[in-house]
Length: 157
Image 1 (spheres, rainbow, N blue to C red):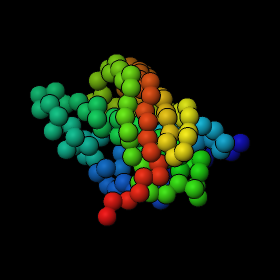
Image 2 (image 1 turned 180 degrees about the vertical axis):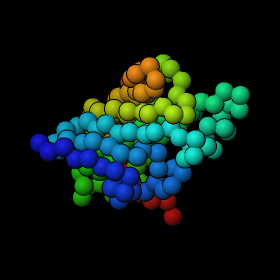
Image 3 (image 1 turned 120 degrees about the horizontal axis):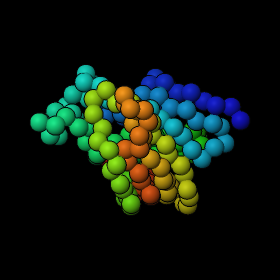
Image 4 (image 1 turned 135 degrees about the horizontal axis):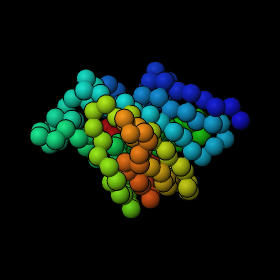
């Protein structure tokens, strides 16, 4: 199977998110696979509002932003697996079993691993983890046991 490498321009064609809210910058997907690896560089310039709006004295990248990275990678995976059959906006229904293992800061590089565990009638179940690469190497930052999303949610009017 062929590996598909996506850059930010490719991702913008598949996801509805734009500038400040398009969190992932690249991804690798192997055709026929139920997994994707997405990447995000935490930068002062692009992530400034999130870094300084969370805790002013300790500059962390918020967990909710890390979840959004995971959500976008999951939506991208579903779009790549079903390029013509998925319409509407992706919606997250819930999470289970989230563990925060180490804080994420500016300068860290996130690797978002998402695996599709099950799909049934437009509802998708994922698991995975977010790892960060910093000066010490690659460390697990967040573990997600289960995320449930609806890919075919109709657009709001």
